[in-house]
Length: 160
Image (cartoon, rainbow, N blue to C red; front, side, top):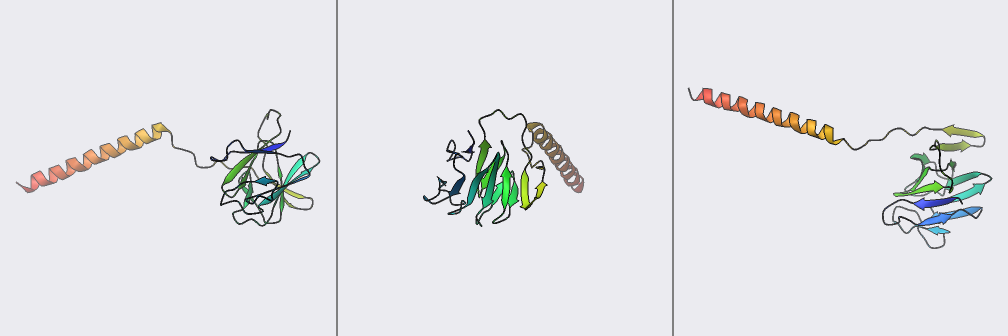
C-alpha cells in the first residue's frame, strides 16, 4: 500500500495511505492529511495517483515543496519515487510502497508537458568524524605550546 510516513520529530509515525486519486496536504483541518506545523502552509500541496506514478503538485506554498531536496516550482508537478523524501517546509515525509526498496530512486522534477528533468542528489555536509576532531585538537595544542614557548623565550631574553 502506497503511503507517506512523517519522519520529522514531533510528528514521527504519522502516516497517510494514498488510496484516493487526490490527497490534499496542509496545516488546516480541511485537508485529507493535516500536519499542524507552522512551516506547512494551510493548503500546501496535492498528491495525485496517476497510474503507477505518485505526482506531487505544490499549491503556491510559502516555505516550498521539495522532492528529494529539489525545489518544486509553485503550481508545478513532480513525480515522487518509492523511498524518496518529500519535504513540506520543515516537515519531511518518506514515500513507501510496502515493498522492499532495492535501491533509492533518483529525484525527478517535471518541468512541463513531456519534459522531465532528472537531478541526482548531491552529497550534503556531513558530521565530521571523531578522528578529524582529535587531529584538529592535537594541532591546536601543539600550536598553543609553540606560542607559549616563543613568548617565554622573548620575555626571558628581554630581562637580560
